[in-house]
Image: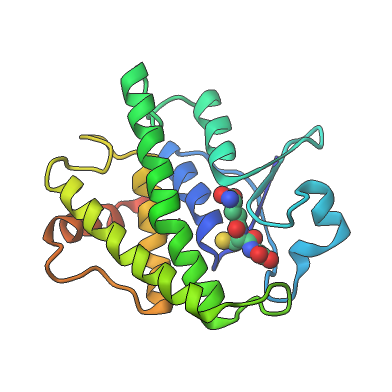
Length: 202
Ligand SMILES: N[C@@H](CCC(=O)N[C@@H](CS)C(=O)NCC(=O)O)C(=O)O
């Protein structure tokens, strides 16, 4: 088993934190995104959209999409549960994971790609769109702040996948100078707690 990872990128970090929470260690191989190693024919054979992370199993089967990789490990190693155990927990964790993905993680990513031109060798940056994405990310932080006024973690009283997605998004947001607003005290309380878990340094 091999995880194709990029240490500086926010999406593979989601998988690394997930594995650390489970206490699973697997070999990892770094993929250099700026030089386009992820776009080679060899990497595209593993993931047609040329993105990391990718998990390659010993029989050559490849799983891409961070959440799909997490689901694979959650099924094989259910403890500690990070995606819920009952029907309602699973549904609410899935619900929040999608909302954090689209409302925050993706917005931060689009802000980064479209305002910095980091990947201009492979996409056309639209700075106005990037700016709007940054505004959307800030708006979603208000949603999270309200949710975290009601519960310890995003999807309830346990640390779960949406917490990992949000942590990676918020840390990466620094690159585009998006920070937690001073008035978002519940989001800040949550951030202090999740960013000091040992898994955060994975
Ligand atoms: N939806 C995918 C997103 C993967 C993704 O966008 N990965 C980025 C790194 S954070 C990447 O490989 N970018 C390289 C590129 O766009 O060329 C997932 O969850 O795994």
